Image (cartoon, rainbow, N blue to C red; front, side, top):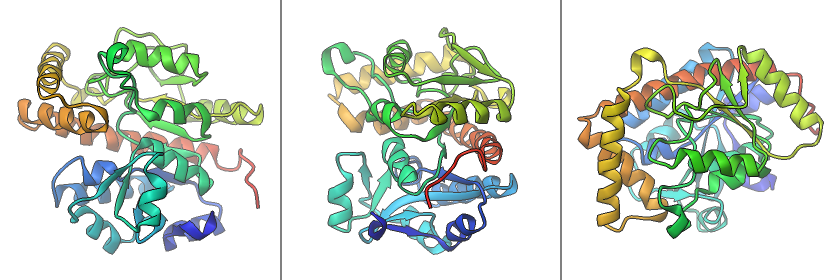
Length: 308
């Protein structure tokens, strides 16, 4: 496995010096927004992680290697390239073998983070059960990965384009804990709450770190969702954004958009219908997640025994 992993100098130094590392996905760079805004956002998020005392590891597939951390030049190249593959679990072997340029989703970022012995991963929102999945069976691979891969995911809940109720039922069936960070209700990405009450609420990063340690010490395989609401000042009006989402979902159905194309289509259409306000909210929640995730990583460091 090690022949496929390539660490940035910053991440390599962090491992030598036992500094906490926070994994970051790359799909948000390649498929989330245009250049150069995507690269600027990625650099800002990485700097937030550093400012909190941790080390960022943006993960991507380049030149037949799984890059655990990107240099500034690699980040620039990645953000400015066309035709970047969106890589899920099923795609990973081919993209690596064919030396394609690939962006990691939540699923593949979790897989690669576990390979690199990184327990903390920060993203915007996880995938889940799509609306109408009872007919289409359109369910994100993120949920299966959370059930078996030992990485904690800090997010602003599941993307609100999904069926949040069915997503929560799926996670419960798979035994994945969803921990609300200073909240009793599942955040809905663009908004701070939803109708779905959570089983666990944590008031501090230390409390979350202790819960993760206990989970993995007990040999309970799989990750955990740390549901961190978007800051109040950045949240969107619930009725407004829900109306926009409903319109975008109907348009996707009309255009027969499905599978892994549905999420980028819906997020892009929502951005257009909100005149960019949804993207501003998306960037704000990712930055907030980076702060909280880095603090949890600091609390977690030293609690988890790693193989030598």
